[in-house]
View 1: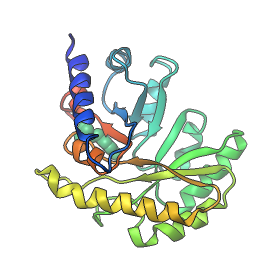
View 2: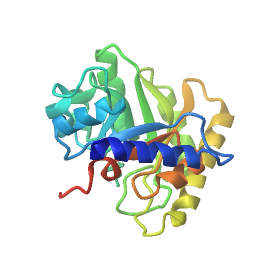
View 3: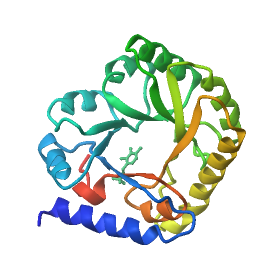
View 4: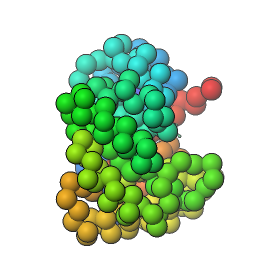
Amino acid sequence: MSQIEKAIQDIKKNIQEAQKSSFAAKDVLLLAVTKTVDPVRINEAVACGITAVGENRVQELEKKFDQVEKGVSWHLIGHLQTNKVKYIVDKVALIHSLDSISLAKEINKRSGQAGRRMPVLVQVNVADEDTKFGIAPKETMDFIKEVSVMPNIHIQGLMTIGPFVSEPEEVRPIFRCLRELRDEVSSQGLSGVDMNYLSMGMTNDYQVAVEEGANIIRVGSAIFGQRSV
Ligand SMILES: *Cc1c(COP(=O)(O)O)cnc(C)c1O
């Protein structure tokens, strides 16, 4: 068995274990984060059952797009600059990182031109770290209301990046907060808004994230090994 195959099997086992928690989702998507990973190894992961990949840079996504098996869905998980939206609007299945009204306007415009309604997640800066992009939790509801009237954007959930700490348990309150925020938004029943996805958890903390209700986890190094850059 290859290293990648073994890693994916281990992660899937850990997901199942974490799904015993009462808050856990029934279906959890393992999104393979492929930044810095070459297309050959990405395709190896696809052969082992990976169906969706996440890139955090537009340029890298564009470069690899045609070299990866068709049928794989591409997710943009990193900060998206307004002037780059046009390059990905026909390529991605989900944008995880909607974090400003100006970006929403551009996605709305470009998606309209491409004849599609773009699925997006709102990135929330739960940990309130200066170094991170994202909407503050207390501003999230108003932000979602404002975006919800844009016809070519479909808000489908929330995303957060946990703080980098050595002990994954420390991130639990952050994930819990995002789940509660999701429930609060859901309860508003806003038209055109669906809270289908909670994207949270990475290599260091995905088990805790699944226990707290994540249904998309973004895992890179646990699949492909440490990144050198
Ligand atoms: C790199 C990255 C990940 C994956 O990180 P790992 O620790 O390698 O699993 C997840 N989410 C985002 C937004 C990233 O940039």
